[in-house]
Image (tube, rainbow, N blue to C red; front, side, top):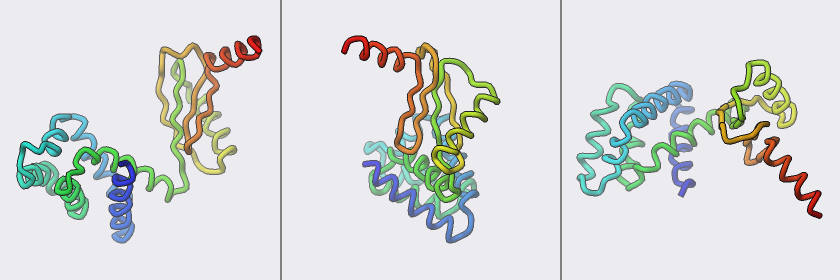
Length: 176
């Protein structure tokens, strides 16, 4: 069903481009996303069939009126009206992806065993930009379960340089 969230994101992005406000819309989405993160029960309320559709749409309007562009509010209300409230967070991610694509950027999700230094991040960014031919935005996180190395996910590809993967490759060579 993620194609539905992508369609909403594309519609919102087209509106933002038409108004010349893609970055303003991105900032408004960040604000709305932060509110949903801080109040996880709010998304459940917006998606609950036990509460009338009108009450749910009014709750959304009350929460975000004068904080986000009207056309964005209308789109979010439409998502609730059509029963797609649970897709709102995914739509927000899709919008960010569209904005990055338009700027010629890609997101690289980097997982490492320890925190990367700024020099390591810069070196990794340069290598990825050279390999993929576009500006890369690194989203780094630490996974203490990794023995060592890093794993990068970008543009539908996985570059796995973790110690676990390397050890597995050595094991497979030894077993054959």
